[in-house]
Length: 559
Image (cartoon, rainbow, N blue to C red; front, side, top):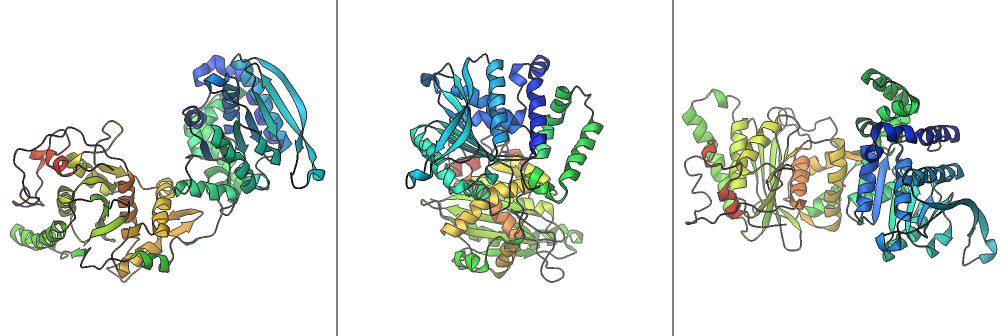
Protein backbone atom coordinates (compact mmCIF):
# COMPACT_ATOMS: atom_id res chain seq x y z
CA UNK A 1 0.00 0.00 0.00
CA UNK A 2 1.35 3.45 -0.89
CA UNK A 3 -1.03 5.36 1.35
CA UNK A 4 -3.05 4.73 4.47
CA UNK A 5 -6.37 4.18 2.67
CA UNK A 6 -7.91 5.06 -0.67
CA UNK A 7 -10.18 8.08 -0.96
CA UNK A 8 -13.13 5.93 -2.03
CA UNK A 9 -12.66 3.37 0.77
CA UNK A 10 -12.25 6.06 3.41
CA UNK A 11 -15.35 7.92 2.27
CA UNK A 12 -17.44 4.74 2.14
CA UNK A 13 -16.49 3.63 5.65
CA UNK A 14 -16.97 7.05 7.21
CA UNK A 15 -20.24 7.84 5.45
CA UNK A 16 -21.74 4.53 6.49
CA UNK A 17 -20.67 4.96 10.11
CA UNK A 18 -22.08 8.50 10.30
CA UNK A 19 -25.31 7.74 8.49
CA UNK A 20 -26.14 4.94 10.89
CA UNK A 21 -25.10 6.56 14.19
CA UNK A 22 -28.66 7.01 15.40
CA UNK A 23 -29.34 3.32 14.75
CA UNK A 24 -26.18 2.36 16.65
CA UNK A 25 -27.09 4.54 19.63
CA UNK A 26 -30.58 3.08 19.69
CA UNK A 27 -29.12 -0.45 19.63
CA UNK A 28 -26.29 -0.15 22.15
CA UNK A 29 -27.01 3.08 24.03
CA UNK A 30 -24.89 6.21 24.15
CA UNK A 31 -22.50 4.94 26.88
CA UNK A 32 -21.53 1.98 24.66
CA UNK A 33 -21.46 3.73 21.31
CA UNK A 34 -17.65 3.71 21.37
CA UNK A 35 -15.93 0.35 21.20
CA UNK A 36 -13.60 -0.57 24.03
CA UNK A 37 -10.37 0.31 22.24
CA UNK A 38 -11.82 3.65 21.12
CA UNK A 39 -12.87 4.45 24.68
CA UNK A 40 -9.47 3.30 26.00
CA UNK A 41 -7.78 5.85 23.76
CA UNK A 42 -9.98 8.67 25.07
CA UNK A 43 -9.82 7.74 28.77
CA UNK A 44 -6.19 8.89 29.37
CA UNK A 45 -6.93 12.15 27.59
CA UNK A 46 -9.88 12.81 29.89
CA UNK A 47 -7.56 11.97 32.80
CA UNK A 48 -5.10 14.68 31.78
CA UNK A 49 -2.48 12.83 29.69
CA UNK A 50 -0.48 15.46 27.84
CA UNK A 51 1.07 13.30 25.09
CA UNK A 52 -0.69 10.19 23.77
CA UNK A 53 0.89 8.08 21.02
CA UNK A 54 -1.20 5.31 19.44
CA UNK A 55 0.10 2.57 17.13
CA UNK A 56 -2.93 1.29 15.29
CA UNK A 57 -4.20 -1.00 12.58
CA UNK A 58 -5.95 0.37 9.57
CA UNK A 59 -9.73 0.28 9.29
CA UNK A 60 -10.50 0.24 13.01
CA UNK A 61 -12.31 3.60 13.29
CA UNK A 62 -9.98 5.33 15.75
CA UNK A 63 -10.33 8.64 13.90
CA UNK A 64 -14.09 8.41 14.35
CA UNK A 65 -13.57 7.93 18.08
CA UNK A 66 -11.13 10.85 18.25
CA UNK A 67 -13.75 13.07 16.64
CA UNK A 68 -16.00 12.40 19.63
CA UNK A 69 -13.21 13.55 21.96
CA UNK A 70 -12.64 16.69 19.89
CA UNK A 71 -16.30 17.68 20.34
CA UNK A 72 -16.25 16.89 24.07
CA UNK A 73 -13.09 18.96 24.60
CA UNK A 74 -14.01 21.96 22.43
CA UNK A 75 -17.62 21.95 23.63
CA UNK A 76 -16.70 22.74 27.24
CA UNK A 77 -16.28 26.16 28.70
CA UNK A 78 -12.75 27.16 29.66
CA UNK A 79 -13.33 26.61 33.38
CA UNK A 80 -14.26 23.00 32.64
CA UNK A 81 -11.13 22.36 30.57
CA UNK A 82 -12.40 23.46 27.19
CA UNK A 83 -9.90 24.37 24.48
CA UNK A 84 -9.53 24.59 20.72
CA UNK A 85 -8.85 21.31 18.93
CA UNK A 86 -6.73 21.13 15.77
CA UNK A 87 -6.70 18.09 13.51
CA UNK A 88 -3.91 17.49 11.00
CA UNK A 89 -3.53 14.66 8.54
CA UNK A 90 -1.86 13.96 5.22
CA UNK A 91 -4.90 14.46 2.95
CA UNK A 92 -7.74 16.90 2.47
CA UNK A 93 -10.25 14.04 2.25
CA UNK A 94 -9.43 12.86 5.75
CA UNK A 95 -9.76 16.35 7.23
CA UNK A 96 -13.14 16.84 5.55
CA UNK A 97 -14.38 13.53 6.89
CA UNK A 98 -13.08 14.37 10.37
CA UNK A 99 -15.06 17.59 10.43
CA UNK A 100 -18.17 15.73 9.23
CA UNK A 101 -17.69 13.20 12.03
CA UNK A 102 -17.33 16.03 14.56
CA UNK A 103 -20.57 17.59 13.32
CA UNK A 104 -22.29 14.23 13.75
CA UNK A 105 -20.96 13.85 17.30
CA UNK A 106 -21.99 17.42 18.16
CA UNK A 107 -25.54 16.51 17.19
CA UNK A 108 -25.39 13.27 19.20
CA UNK A 109 -24.04 15.08 22.25
CA UNK A 110 -26.55 17.94 21.81
CA UNK A 111 -23.66 20.38 21.53
CA UNK A 112 -24.52 23.65 19.81
CA UNK A 113 -22.40 24.16 16.69
CA UNK A 114 -22.47 27.83 15.81
CA UNK A 115 -21.05 27.32 12.34
CA UNK A 116 -19.45 24.75 10.08
CA UNK A 117 -17.46 26.35 7.29
CA UNK A 118 -14.43 26.22 5.04
CA UNK A 119 -11.66 28.78 5.44
CA UNK A 120 -8.32 29.61 3.87
CA UNK A 121 -5.50 29.21 6.36
CA UNK A 122 -2.29 31.23 5.88
CA UNK A 123 0.83 29.06 6.09
CA UNK A 124 3.49 31.67 6.76
CA UNK A 125 7.24 31.15 7.07
CA UNK A 126 8.54 34.05 9.23
CA UNK A 127 11.92 33.85 7.46
CA UNK A 128 10.29 34.10 4.03
CA UNK A 129 6.92 35.85 4.42
CA UNK A 130 6.73 36.40 0.68
CA UNK A 131 6.29 32.63 0.27
CA UNK A 132 3.07 32.56 2.31
CA UNK A 133 0.53 30.18 0.85
CA UNK A 134 -3.11 29.64 1.62
CA UNK A 135 -4.32 26.20 2.68
CA UNK A 136 -7.93 25.09 2.62
CA UNK A 137 -9.14 24.21 6.11
CA UNK A 138 -12.43 23.18 7.70
CA UNK A 139 -13.80 24.58 10.94
CA UNK A 140 -16.59 24.08 13.44
CA UNK A 141 -17.25 26.88 15.92
CA UNK A 142 -19.06 25.79 19.07
CA UNK A 143 -21.23 27.77 21.48
CA UNK A 144 -18.50 27.38 24.13
CA UNK A 145 -16.39 29.84 22.15
CA UNK A 146 -13.87 27.20 21.09
CA UNK A 147 -13.46 25.70 17.66
CA UNK A 148 -12.36 22.54 15.90
CA UNK A 149 -10.00 23.27 13.03
CA UNK A 150 -9.00 20.56 10.52
CA UNK A 151 -5.97 21.09 8.26
CA UNK A 152 -4.67 18.87 5.50
CA UNK A 153 -0.96 19.58 5.95
CA UNK A 154 1.53 20.79 8.56
CA UNK A 155 1.32 24.59 8.60
CA UNK A 156 4.06 26.48 10.40
CA UNK A 157 1.39 28.78 11.84
CA UNK A 158 0.51 25.99 14.27
CA UNK A 159 3.18 27.58 16.47
CA UNK A 160 0.93 30.53 17.14
CA UNK A 161 -2.01 28.51 18.40
CA UNK A 162 -2.94 26.74 21.62
CA UNK A 163 -5.14 23.82 22.60
CA UNK A 164 -5.25 20.13 21.72
CA UNK A 165 -3.79 18.84 18.47
CA UNK A 166 -4.55 15.49 16.83
CA UNK A 167 -2.00 14.30 14.26
CA UNK A 168 -3.67 11.46 12.38
CA UNK A 169 -1.75 8.94 10.22
CA UNK A 170 1.34 10.74 11.46
CA UNK A 171 3.72 8.37 9.69
CA UNK A 172 2.48 9.79 6.36
CA UNK A 173 2.46 13.56 7.00
CA UNK A 174 5.15 15.82 5.60
CA UNK A 175 8.05 16.47 7.96
CA UNK A 176 6.62 14.92 11.13
CA UNK A 177 9.72 15.85 13.12
CA UNK A 178 9.16 19.59 12.60
CA UNK A 179 5.43 19.25 13.12
CA UNK A 180 6.01 17.56 16.48
CA UNK A 181 8.30 20.40 17.55
CA UNK A 182 5.50 22.88 16.94
CA UNK A 183 2.78 20.69 18.46
CA UNK A 184 4.68 19.81 21.65
CA UNK A 185 4.90 23.51 22.48
CA UNK A 186 1.17 23.23 23.26
CA UNK A 187 2.04 21.27 26.37
CA UNK A 188 3.61 24.31 28.06
CA UNK A 189 0.18 25.88 28.56
CA UNK A 190 -1.83 22.81 29.39
CA UNK A 191 -2.58 21.61 25.87
CA UNK A 192 -2.60 18.04 24.62
CA UNK A 193 -0.94 16.24 21.72
CA UNK A 194 -2.44 13.05 20.27
CA UNK A 195 -0.36 11.22 17.64
CA UNK A 196 -2.10 8.27 15.92
CA UNK A 197 -0.85 6.26 12.99
CA UNK A 198 -0.36 3.01 11.19
CA UNK A 199 3.35 2.28 10.74
CA UNK A 200 5.30 3.26 7.63
CA UNK A 201 8.68 1.63 8.25
CA UNK A 202 10.89 1.25 11.29
CA UNK A 203 12.97 4.32 10.43
CA UNK A 204 9.95 6.61 10.14
CA UNK A 205 9.74 9.47 12.65
CA UNK A 206 6.51 8.03 14.01
CA UNK A 207 8.25 4.81 15.03
CA UNK A 208 11.11 6.87 16.47
CA UNK A 209 8.55 8.63 18.67
CA UNK A 210 7.00 5.30 19.71
CA UNK A 211 10.40 3.90 20.63
CA UNK A 212 11.33 7.04 22.56
CA UNK A 213 8.28 6.56 24.78
CA UNK A 214 8.78 2.81 25.17
CA UNK A 215 12.45 3.43 26.05
CA UNK A 216 11.30 6.13 28.51
CA UNK A 217 13.41 8.75 26.76
CA UNK A 218 10.31 10.93 26.42
CA UNK A 219 7.34 11.16 28.82
CA UNK A 220 4.01 10.17 27.39
CA UNK A 221 1.35 7.49 27.19
CA UNK A 222 1.57 4.70 24.61
CA UNK A 223 -1.27 2.54 23.28
CA UNK A 224 -1.24 -0.22 20.69
CA UNK A 225 -4.37 -1.29 18.83
CA UNK A 226 -3.84 -4.04 16.29
CA UNK A 227 -6.45 -5.63 14.05
CA UNK A 228 -7.09 -8.64 16.27
CA UNK A 229 -7.50 -6.47 19.37
CA UNK A 230 -10.09 -4.41 17.54
CA UNK A 231 -11.94 -7.57 16.51
CA UNK A 232 -11.91 -8.89 20.09
CA UNK A 233 -13.38 -5.56 21.21
CA UNK A 234 -16.26 -5.89 18.74
CA UNK A 235 -15.16 -4.19 15.51
CA UNK A 236 -16.78 -6.68 13.14
CA UNK A 237 -19.91 -6.90 15.28
CA UNK A 238 -20.25 -3.12 14.99
CA UNK A 239 -19.72 -3.29 11.24
CA UNK A 240 -22.51 -5.85 11.03
CA UNK A 241 -24.78 -3.60 13.11
CA UNK A 242 -24.07 -0.57 10.93
CA UNK A 243 -24.59 -2.49 7.69
CA UNK A 244 -27.57 -4.49 8.85
CA UNK A 245 -25.85 -7.85 8.66
CA UNK A 246 -26.12 -10.82 10.98
CA UNK A 247 -22.93 -11.45 12.97
CA UNK A 248 -21.47 -14.92 13.30
CA UNK A 249 -18.04 -16.26 14.36
CA UNK A 250 -17.67 -17.90 10.96
CA UNK A 251 -18.47 -14.68 9.15
CA UNK A 252 -16.02 -12.72 11.27
CA UNK A 253 -13.24 -15.26 10.67
CA UNK A 254 -13.87 -15.15 6.92
CA UNK A 255 -13.90 -11.34 6.88
CA UNK A 256 -10.69 -11.20 8.94
CA UNK A 257 -8.91 -13.49 6.49
CA UNK A 258 -10.14 -11.47 3.52
CA UNK A 259 -8.66 -8.30 5.02
CA UNK A 260 -5.33 -10.02 5.79
CA UNK A 261 -5.18 -11.48 2.27
CA UNK A 262 -5.92 -8.05 0.82
CA UNK A 263 -2.86 -6.54 2.48
CA UNK A 264 -0.70 -9.57 1.66
CA UNK A 265 2.95 -9.12 2.64
CA UNK A 266 2.09 -5.76 4.19
CA UNK A 267 -0.39 -7.20 6.70
CA UNK A 268 2.08 -7.17 9.58
CA UNK A 269 2.67 -3.45 9.17
CA UNK A 270 -0.78 -2.40 7.99
CA UNK A 271 -2.82 -4.43 10.46
CA UNK A 272 -0.63 -5.69 13.30
CA UNK A 273 1.48 -2.62 14.19
CA UNK A 274 4.82 -4.18 13.21
CA UNK A 275 6.97 -1.65 11.32
CA UNK A 276 8.69 -3.15 8.30
CA UNK A 277 12.40 -3.61 8.78
CA UNK A 278 15.09 -6.23 8.37
CA UNK A 279 16.47 -8.30 11.23
CA UNK A 280 19.54 -7.33 13.21
CA UNK A 281 21.25 -7.68 16.56
CA UNK A 282 19.46 -5.94 19.39
CA UNK A 283 22.66 -5.15 21.31
CA UNK A 284 26.17 -4.90 19.94
CA UNK A 285 28.94 -6.97 21.49
CA UNK A 286 31.01 -3.89 22.48
CA UNK A 287 28.00 -2.42 24.33
CA UNK A 288 27.32 -5.71 26.15
CA UNK A 289 30.95 -6.14 27.17
CA UNK A 290 31.12 -2.50 28.30
CA UNK A 291 28.41 -3.24 30.87
CA UNK A 292 30.08 -6.42 32.14
CA UNK A 293 32.08 -4.68 34.84
CA UNK A 294 31.69 -7.12 37.75
CA UNK A 295 34.09 -9.94 38.60
CA UNK A 296 32.50 -13.38 39.06
CA UNK A 297 33.87 -13.47 42.63
CA UNK A 298 31.70 -10.46 43.51
CA UNK A 299 28.56 -11.57 41.65
CA UNK A 300 28.81 -15.32 41.09
CA UNK A 301 27.25 -17.28 38.26
CA UNK A 302 26.46 -20.64 39.84
CA UNK A 303 25.94 -23.43 37.32
CA UNK A 304 24.22 -26.60 38.51
CA UNK A 305 24.16 -29.76 36.39
CA UNK A 306 22.66 -32.77 38.14
CA UNK A 307 23.33 -36.34 36.92
CA UNK A 308 21.01 -37.66 34.23
CA UNK A 309 19.90 -40.44 36.59
CA UNK A 310 19.36 -38.06 39.51
CA UNK A 311 15.69 -38.99 39.97
CA UNK A 312 16.52 -42.68 40.00
CA UNK A 313 18.97 -42.37 42.88
CA UNK A 314 18.08 -42.84 46.54
CA UNK A 315 16.65 -39.95 48.54
CA UNK A 316 19.74 -39.78 50.72
CA UNK A 317 22.02 -39.47 47.70
CA UNK A 318 19.74 -36.90 46.05
CA UNK A 319 19.66 -34.81 49.23
CA UNK A 320 23.43 -34.92 49.46
CA UNK A 321 23.99 -33.93 45.83
CA UNK A 322 21.50 -31.09 46.01
CA UNK A 323 22.54 -29.75 49.43
CA UNK A 324 26.03 -29.00 48.09
CA UNK A 325 24.53 -26.55 45.59
CA UNK A 326 22.18 -25.04 48.17
CA UNK A 327 25.14 -24.32 50.44
CA UNK A 328 26.94 -22.53 47.59
CA UNK A 329 23.89 -20.37 46.94
CA UNK A 330 23.54 -19.61 50.66
CA UNK A 331 27.12 -18.35 50.79
CA UNK A 332 26.40 -15.97 47.92
CA UNK A 333 23.17 -14.76 49.55
CA UNK A 334 24.96 -14.06 52.84
CA UNK A 335 27.16 -11.50 51.05
CA UNK A 336 24.25 -9.42 49.71
CA UNK A 337 23.99 -5.79 50.80
CA UNK A 338 21.16 -5.50 53.35
CA UNK A 339 20.66 -1.82 52.46
CA UNK A 340 19.86 -2.33 48.80
CA UNK A 341 16.63 -3.36 47.16
CA UNK A 342 16.63 -6.48 45.00
CA UNK A 343 14.60 -7.84 42.08
CA UNK A 344 14.39 -11.38 40.75
CA UNK A 345 13.90 -12.83 37.25
CA UNK A 346 13.38 -16.49 36.43
CA UNK A 347 13.26 -18.27 33.07
CA UNK A 348 12.28 -21.90 33.85
CA UNK A 349 13.38 -24.81 31.66
CA UNK A 350 13.84 -28.54 32.10
CA UNK A 351 15.29 -30.39 29.10
CA UNK A 352 16.87 -28.64 26.12
CA UNK A 353 17.71 -25.27 27.69
CA UNK A 354 19.13 -24.17 31.03
CA UNK A 355 16.78 -22.69 33.62
CA UNK A 356 18.12 -19.31 34.70
CA UNK A 357 17.48 -17.22 37.80
CA UNK A 358 19.09 -13.82 38.17
CA UNK A 359 19.03 -11.33 41.03
CA UNK A 360 19.61 -7.60 40.56
CA UNK A 361 20.34 -5.04 43.26
CA UNK A 362 19.17 -1.43 42.99
CA UNK A 363 21.29 1.37 44.39
CA UNK A 364 20.23 4.87 45.40
CA UNK A 365 21.03 6.17 41.90
CA UNK A 366 18.66 3.51 40.46
CA UNK A 367 21.51 1.62 38.82
CA UNK A 368 20.89 -2.12 38.54
CA UNK A 369 23.70 -4.49 39.39
CA UNK A 370 23.83 -8.26 38.98
CA UNK A 371 24.55 -9.91 42.32
CA UNK A 372 23.73 -13.57 41.69
CA UNK A 373 22.82 -15.80 38.75
CA UNK A 374 21.93 -19.49 39.00
CA UNK A 375 21.84 -21.67 35.88
CA UNK A 376 20.39 -25.19 36.09
CA UNK A 377 20.53 -28.15 33.71
CA UNK A 378 18.68 -31.39 34.43
CA UNK A 379 17.35 -29.92 37.66
CA UNK A 380 13.82 -31.19 38.46
CA UNK A 381 11.08 -28.64 39.02
CA UNK A 382 10.82 -29.36 42.76
CA UNK A 383 14.51 -28.54 43.21
CA UNK A 384 14.19 -25.44 41.01
CA UNK A 385 11.33 -24.24 43.20
CA UNK A 386 13.43 -24.86 46.32
CA UNK A 387 16.25 -22.72 44.91
CA UNK A 388 13.80 -19.97 43.97
CA UNK A 389 12.30 -20.13 47.46
CA UNK A 390 15.73 -19.89 49.05
CA UNK A 391 16.64 -16.81 46.99
CA UNK A 392 13.32 -15.03 47.52
CA UNK A 393 13.42 -15.86 51.24
CA UNK A 394 16.83 -14.26 51.69
CA UNK A 395 17.12 -11.45 49.13
CA UNK A 396 17.12 -8.25 51.23
CA UNK A 397 14.39 -5.72 50.54
CA UNK A 398 12.91 -7.70 47.67
CA UNK A 399 10.69 -5.50 45.49
CA UNK A 400 9.45 -8.07 43.02
CA UNK A 401 9.95 -11.38 41.24
CA UNK A 402 8.96 -11.94 37.59
CA UNK A 403 8.66 -15.50 36.32
CA UNK A 404 8.06 -16.73 32.77
CA UNK A 405 4.72 -18.52 33.09
CA UNK A 406 4.06 -19.21 29.41
CA UNK A 407 4.72 -22.96 29.61
CA UNK A 408 6.23 -25.20 32.26
CA UNK A 409 6.90 -22.15 34.41
CA UNK A 410 3.19 -21.61 35.10
CA UNK A 411 3.16 -24.17 37.92
CA UNK A 412 6.42 -22.86 39.40
CA UNK A 413 5.20 -19.27 39.30
CA UNK A 414 1.93 -20.28 40.94
CA UNK A 415 3.66 -22.24 43.73
CA UNK A 416 6.11 -19.43 44.49
CA UNK A 417 3.19 -17.01 44.33
CA UNK A 418 1.48 -18.99 47.09
CA UNK A 419 4.54 -18.55 49.28
CA UNK A 420 5.36 -14.91 48.57
CA UNK A 421 2.09 -13.45 47.30
CA UNK A 422 0.89 -13.59 43.69
CA UNK A 423 0.57 -10.22 42.01
CA UNK A 424 -2.88 -9.76 40.44
CA UNK A 425 -5.26 -6.85 40.00
CA UNK A 426 -7.08 -8.04 43.12
CA UNK A 427 -3.84 -8.56 45.10
CA UNK A 428 -1.45 -5.83 43.86
CA UNK A 429 0.77 -6.28 46.92
CA UNK A 430 1.98 -9.70 45.80
CA UNK A 431 5.68 -10.03 45.00
CA UNK A 432 5.45 -12.67 42.27
CA UNK A 433 4.47 -11.63 38.73
CA UNK A 434 3.31 -14.37 36.35
CA UNK A 435 4.55 -13.16 32.96
CA UNK A 436 3.11 -14.53 29.73
CA UNK A 437 5.95 -13.82 27.33
CA UNK A 438 4.77 -12.55 23.93
CA UNK A 439 5.82 -10.20 21.14
CA UNK A 440 3.78 -7.46 22.78
CA UNK A 441 5.48 -7.98 26.14
CA UNK A 442 8.92 -8.02 24.52
CA UNK A 443 8.09 -4.85 22.58
CA UNK A 444 7.16 -3.03 25.78
CA UNK A 445 9.87 -4.34 28.13
CA UNK A 446 13.04 -4.90 26.11
CA UNK A 447 13.35 -1.15 25.24
CA UNK A 448 13.78 0.04 28.87
CA UNK A 449 16.49 -2.61 29.36
CA UNK A 450 18.31 -1.43 26.26
CA UNK A 451 18.11 2.13 27.54
CA UNK A 452 19.84 0.96 30.74
CA UNK A 453 22.63 -0.52 28.61
CA UNK A 454 22.98 2.68 26.60
CA UNK A 455 22.92 4.92 29.70
CA UNK A 456 25.35 2.77 31.70
CA UNK A 457 22.68 2.14 34.33
CA UNK A 458 23.16 -1.63 34.48
CA UNK A 459 26.24 -3.67 35.46
CA UNK A 460 26.63 -7.39 34.82
CA UNK A 461 28.99 -10.20 35.68
CA UNK A 462 31.70 -10.95 33.13
CA UNK A 463 30.49 -14.14 31.50
CA UNK A 464 31.08 -15.32 27.92
CA UNK A 465 27.89 -17.37 27.74
CA UNK A 466 25.81 -14.41 28.86
CA UNK A 467 27.29 -12.40 26.00
CA UNK A 468 26.07 -15.12 23.64
CA UNK A 469 22.58 -15.01 25.15
CA UNK A 470 22.30 -11.22 24.87
CA UNK A 471 23.64 -11.27 21.30
CA UNK A 472 21.01 -13.86 20.40
CA UNK A 473 18.22 -11.30 20.86
CA UNK A 474 17.35 -10.06 17.38
CA UNK A 475 15.21 -7.22 16.06
CA UNK A 476 12.65 -9.09 13.99
CA UNK A 477 10.12 -6.96 12.12
CA UNK A 478 10.93 -4.09 14.44
CA UNK A 479 10.48 -6.00 17.72
CA UNK A 480 13.28 -7.41 19.94
CA UNK A 481 12.66 -11.17 19.94
CA UNK A 482 14.25 -14.51 20.73
CA UNK A 483 14.61 -16.42 17.42
CA UNK A 484 13.87 -20.17 17.41
CA UNK A 485 17.42 -21.33 16.68
CA UNK A 486 19.73 -22.45 19.51
CA UNK A 487 23.49 -22.03 19.75
CA UNK A 488 26.23 -24.02 21.43
CA UNK A 489 27.42 -27.60 21.52
CA UNK A 490 25.13 -30.61 21.76
CA UNK A 491 23.91 -31.08 25.30
CA UNK A 492 24.81 -27.51 26.23
CA UNK A 493 22.81 -25.40 23.80
CA UNK A 494 21.48 -22.00 24.76
CA UNK A 495 18.39 -20.09 23.68
CA UNK A 496 18.91 -16.58 25.01
CA UNK A 497 17.99 -17.83 28.48
CA UNK A 498 19.99 -15.29 30.47
CA UNK A 499 18.58 -12.47 28.32
CA UNK A 500 15.04 -13.57 29.22
CA UNK A 501 15.85 -13.87 32.94
CA UNK A 502 17.53 -10.45 32.84
CA UNK A 503 14.61 -8.65 31.15
CA UNK A 504 12.26 -10.28 33.67
CA UNK A 505 14.42 -9.13 36.60
CA UNK A 506 14.69 -5.64 35.12
CA UNK A 507 10.91 -5.55 34.69
CA UNK A 508 10.46 -6.58 38.34
CA UNK A 509 12.88 -3.86 39.44
CA UNK A 510 10.71 -1.21 37.74
CA UNK A 511 7.38 -2.29 39.21
CA UNK A 512 6.19 -0.34 42.23
CA UNK A 513 5.63 -2.59 45.26
CA UNK A 514 3.76 -1.76 48.45
CA UNK A 515 3.92 -3.71 51.67
CA UNK A 516 0.72 -4.69 53.41
CA UNK A 517 -0.37 -6.76 56.45
CA UNK A 518 3.01 -6.26 58.12
CA UNK A 519 3.43 -7.45 61.71
CA UNK A 520 6.79 -7.20 63.52
CA UNK A 521 8.27 -10.41 64.87
CA UNK A 522 9.05 -10.66 68.56
CA UNK A 523 12.39 -12.40 67.97
CA UNK A 524 14.48 -11.79 64.88
CA UNK A 525 15.84 -14.88 63.14
CA UNK A 526 18.84 -15.31 60.90
CA UNK A 527 18.18 -15.56 57.20
CA UNK A 528 18.85 -19.29 57.10
CA UNK A 529 17.36 -20.33 60.43
CA UNK A 530 13.98 -21.17 58.95
CA UNK A 531 15.49 -23.22 56.13
CA UNK A 532 17.99 -25.19 58.25
CA UNK A 533 15.82 -28.31 58.16
CA UNK A 534 16.16 -28.49 54.38
CA UNK A 535 15.51 -25.41 52.25
CA UNK A 536 14.34 -27.38 49.27
CA UNK A 537 11.55 -29.20 51.16
CA UNK A 538 8.08 -27.78 50.43
CA UNK A 539 6.74 -26.01 53.51
CA UNK A 540 3.26 -24.68 52.92
CA UNK A 541 2.42 -24.63 56.61
CA UNK A 542 4.05 -21.24 57.10
CA UNK A 543 1.83 -19.58 54.51
CA UNK A 544 -0.91 -17.27 55.64
CA UNK A 545 -3.25 -15.81 53.03
CA UNK A 546 -0.71 -16.45 50.26
CA UNK A 547 1.87 -14.11 51.81
CA UNK A 548 4.70 -14.92 54.20
CA UNK A 549 5.16 -12.61 57.14
CA UNK A 550 8.82 -13.56 57.40
CA UNK A 551 9.30 -12.39 53.84
CA UNK A 552 7.47 -9.15 54.57
CA UNK A 553 9.77 -8.58 57.54
CA UNK A 554 12.80 -8.53 55.26
CA UNK A 555 11.20 -6.85 52.27
CA UNK A 556 10.48 -3.47 53.76
CA UNK A 557 11.95 -1.52 50.85
CA UNK A 558 9.51 0.29 48.57
CA UNK A 559 10.58 1.28 45.06
